[in-house]
Image 1 (cartoon, rainbow, N blue to C red):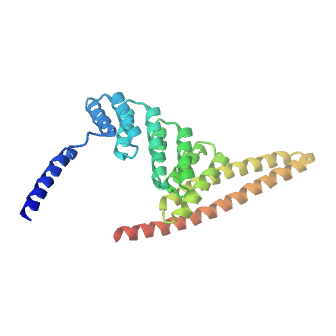
Image 2: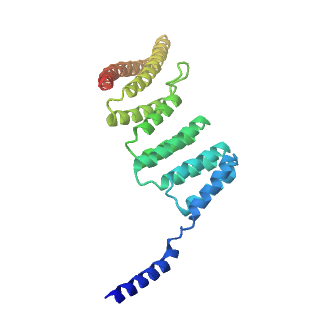
Image 3: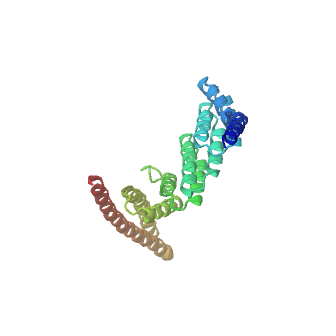
Length: 264
């Protein structure tokens, strides 16, 4: 029995000794090595080289949110808009949640707005909504873009009905998704007020045209047509005034709810 124990102990020790080399530390992965190289370049403010190294790391392991963010930052420091957008777009592709994808496309849109390049900003916001249809933030910004194009943010600008209609369409979607968002109703009122001014101007022009034609009894058909247009614009004014009242009521209600929530 003792001889067996001694023999087993020797064999066990030899087995353990043989296994020891397997416990050596694994060499750094390619992803880690490129991150380390990228960090050195970043610290030295060598932004282009840093971005390249981070890109190689992400090729080896794309599931590195922090490295995607850092790579985009390096492109920004290099004032490389194309590289920044490409990085954020590829980062979005690694996301499985629509909300996370949409957030990155909103970031791209925000950068285009700062340029400013509203057409590209609009495209990025639309991409965010395509991915995540209930993205109220992107919908709100799309409403804002079309409000500006429609002249709603400039009292001296002419109204562009087609753009104002699109703005209202986006804000209506926001209201359905987030009915307790007060600013949505403020934005709607601004657009509707612009419409009131637009139709008032059109009504006055039609009435003046009708009076001018009244001087010539042979132009009765033109008088009737101009008068009909004036009445149509007046009806539109009345309709938008009612909508403004409704939006004001919704704003008041939403504001009360927001204040009640804040107090809690």
